[in-house]
Length: 196
Image: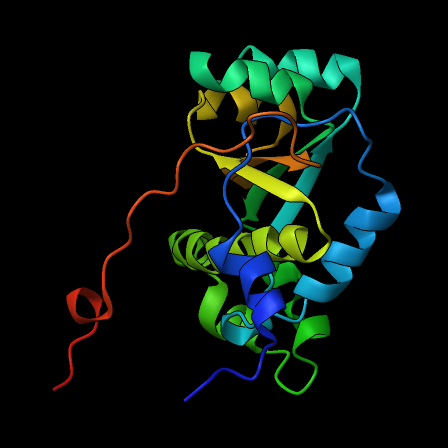
């Protein structure tokens, strides 16, 4: 059985896509980011909670504030990527539920009145949305370089408030010279899938 999605699109989104480590200086526009969001916002989350928030680091001042918190090996590529997106889980996402679930506005209080429940749900569902975001970057013909090598507490203090938790930083742009490391192996179907 074949997939419905065109093989070229499959390559763009998955088989040929890899984490970029260098970028050209071609800017990533607000219009491109808007188009990415307007596509990926349709990805599913539990209760349609949509807890992902995105902080775009574009200015030289913002970049300087960010780079000092990145792991040493991530600093050069973060300093030179045209755009960096901080992907963040909003622990107060439940405040938006009456608008996002108009047929069940009481979900806000019925399921998410307690902070630990919200934190756990936001972490899982924002991670789903972060994956959609990376696929959306690829769909825009751009390269993504997602990273978790950083001082999270430092970045959170620098850019966020106590209601937001950093998941990852994603460098975004057109791939530059020698952007790719060799493709690493993947597990086979039989190693991953079990039927009971």
